[in-house]
Image (cartoon, rainbow, N blue to C red; front, side, top):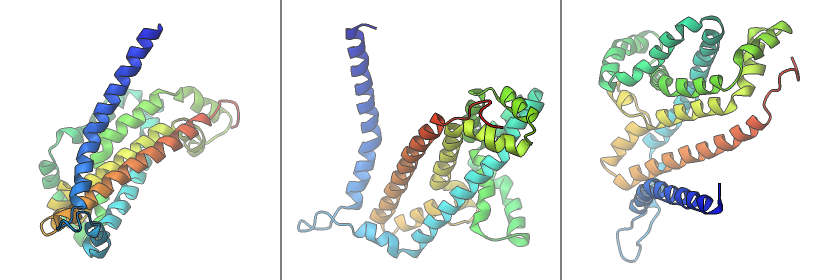
Length: 268
């Protein structure tokens, strides 16, 4: 590639980056401006809306609940989906399309229809198991399947899973060891991306929680927005910043873990 072509490509990348950055940052900047807007010329800027977040019990409870749901959903997704995908790839490749169809099916089901189907189940869970809002993790596990499946599928496709697993099994490793010391260390980025997608979906989910009469972060933000729009906007900005920070942290961690990938034959 000659020098002029490299320069044009660099300019093109810079322009695209600036446009995309403006597309994402301008709305966030407007939200920050609105949440810090004062009521007089003497005090044009104030942090009262942000201070009220900690003083609003419903918002604090919603934040804690959504974070708990995010952790439970992410771990449940990995425990359920990753071993299943590995087993299908190694032992039952003929049903891989069926598993993919099942995992992608929630994308085609409207949220209203999904809630109608889940409502009788949650009535039973509320009576016989627990009325806790953490039971929402079951519904969220269904919602995150399509996104997590694609991320994990890309990670598994990037490694020679069959060779690595057969080598470990020939050296006496059990399936738990294969999963823990072979599969997971070789696809940290895919696992972290799947977890991030799960966290982002749970933190931003409103429809299912509202229709099932549960109080999570977004439901509380909607309630607070009816009486105090700046505070609800401040919470929304905080959620976006949290998701961005998680993305940056997971990207850095995933890059470092990828550099220390498992090397076949290094250890059993």
